[in-house]
Image (cartoon, rainbow, N blue to C red):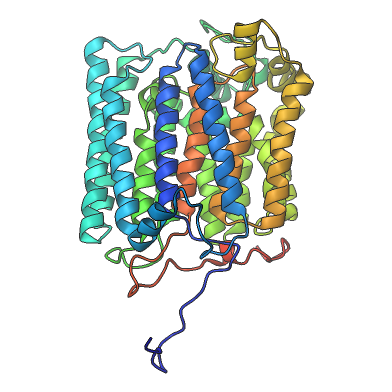
Length: 500
């Protein structure tokens, strides 16, 4: 073995507790992600016990993944014998394994777009046009990833992402124009809330005209309406704002995957970044997501912005992004305790973020506290179970005519949340695994909920996609430098009082 030259720079070694992401685990995650979103697409709007069973299997697999990912096991410790051969192959050729898994997942997604009919009010011809557009976008991205893998340059993947984003915009425009008045209360309330903001009305005191569902409540926190209102004001439809916000979230994921090297230099993260950003635009069921005006892309963009700001050590900006998400939908608050015990973010920033979110929503609360509490808390607690939702709660009602008590469903969420808090506090995982713990908490909350549909499960998938872009991967070859070690990830022992 030849010793290095005296002037050779020392190679940076990763901390034992913060291992680089295995290409094999990435491939398995993509397989579960694709299967889960295919099932979620089929679930709109129908209940099937087998769908719930698949969700449970995915939850168990995700739990095993996050637990193993946060364990402080040395990077060179042996893999289980069942996967040892595959893992050795993946470690020897990390780029082909990762690129191949990404390209294959995108090809499968393209096939799903044209074989699974999404829930839509478009005509048959319009529906097929949109489905083929999304399939083409996925194939373009798969081709770009494949070319970048073979040529060992990320330029093709970045170019393919640009084409994918353009196709996404065209497909979204067709969806919005093809179904100008979707029959869903979400769209009606967002449209009329935007009009009410211009007229100085309080959305929590408004009643909604021609709503097919909720007619006397705004069940979200106010920034959902405020951040989406420009779509209505400028283009006549809040869905345009959702399209723009989705693209901004994808841009944040792309930047999250950049290693800071020149664009012509290859690293696995420079490949995964554009692939992950494109995945957010072409996941199965995206057409329904756009058409129905489901608001989870807003939360995705806030969380992607938070992750990017943490990666760049812009902690004040990270707090702002997270506060915007908290001021948009209530259930993101369940993630704050997990982030509070993660030393990179810390409890001081978590408390500051909660306070900032409180400032954001204060004007509406001060205007009418009883109306806001009714719409965002009381009504949701007392809301009737929706028997076509695919959750364990609804399965118990449909299959054995038993309504699980609140303390039981609440205990499931608290146990998962407690496990996440304990693991994150003890193991101090990297940014990617923190995002996966967040996904795990939200997934369990969905499974025991009275109503959870494609959009809630989509947010879980989006967090997994973001985590792929945030993960640290092995170096491409022995002659190339590994992905740089970022202070926000590697200095896990940093005090939460570090200067922001």
